[in-house]
Length: 155
Image 1: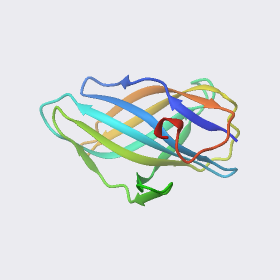
Image 2: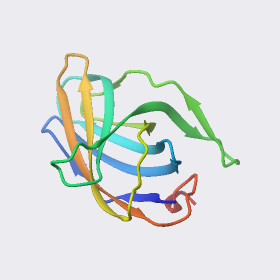
Image 3: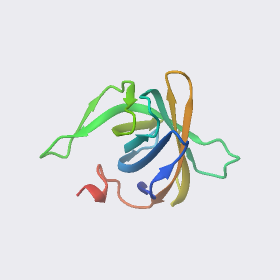
Image 4: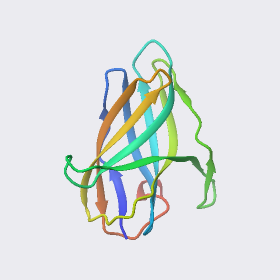
């Protein structure tokens, strides 16, 4: 079993949106990968940006090989006093002008695969209602450990 331990550092993509991300939890089975991300965006423009779509591409091999495509499954929130996660449907959201907006989203990839330990590139793709796309890139470190519902950072 493998655990995506953390995303390394903050990242910045387009000049309109800067972002940061942290892995909250990961569930890996023989048929799917589900992981929760704490995402934060800062809208650097003077206008609100309505977001309709977010997806993650995980590059397990060289960039010339097709990446794993991961799509939003649901929003999540931790239940205080329990080790449970409350889930709600994903809805479009708006990045307010000059402010930071955060979302806790669970993503799913339904491909069957083996993930060897190592560091991999990931790409967060965000699309607004007008069809403009914003791309942010990060590195993910995968370690051979027991899978936890929540990362060590949250304990």
